[in-house]
Length: 84
Image (cartoon, rainbow, N blue to C red; front, side, top):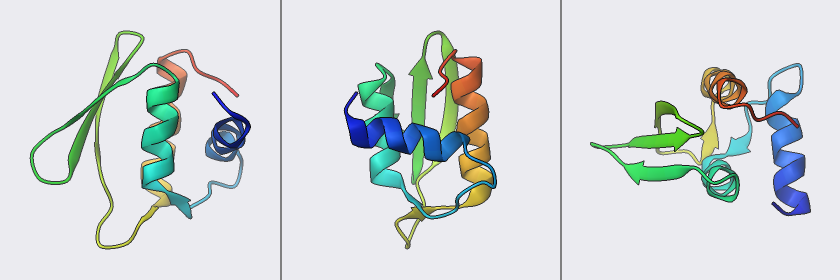
């Protein structure tokens, strides 16, 4: 995991929740953490990390992820044992 990805991980766990995180960067972070990321139906993205599975929706037409999705991602990472 590079410096930019560490900063992104800190941003995901920061309070207040940020709503301006680019989804492409989140996917790159998940891959760097060792997650299995696969395409689902439509805009769905399936993620498996440390035995924990989740499905997220890739934002469209904008690139930025909403605050609710960032909260869900934070919960998923905590369950998978990932902390900044």
